[in-house]
Length: 218
Image (tube, rainbow, N blue to C red; front, side):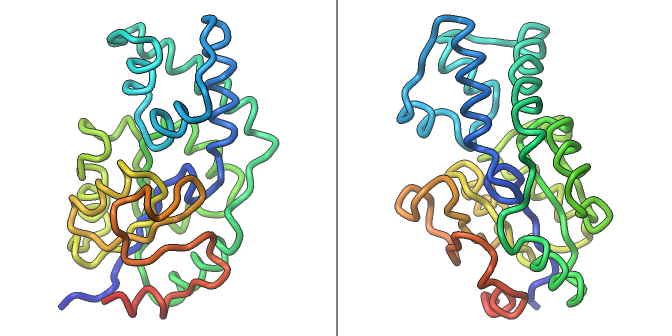
């Protein structure tokens, strides 16, 4: 029977509105290399994309192995330094999480970001002990839009993909959730509905959302 058993959250743009700070970090990173991408380029080629894609696109060459790890850590270190004083959840998130827990919904987080970024956010928000599955970029072989991270999350939570709702804000993330056979709530922190694949529901934040509205999707 298809019913709501689990909710899986992406992190950037879904738990916290981090994208403006990622933009600042990438601008600083690229400025050191005499590059100055436009806002439009960032919107098209940064938000929701893996670091390997972003570096390849903007540096216009393959970046792999030790060099990739070094450059990724440089950029993500910049991000954590910039963002650390500003960590706060998207409005209504913590209350929504408590509502899900009260209804025995299993919870997970599945991000394409490095584990260190996730650890920073989980160190600031009371979420870690409420999550039955916590996956970051290091935990998967294939990144979004591949469904691996969401299928692995469902397995960790002991539920079928068809019993899951995913909260996502990016094209590749929504695609990954759809590819996993899950229902999707599009979080409009980064994109408009027209810029995302079709979602089951769209929200600006979580203030008007509760367990009953999500359960009704089934």
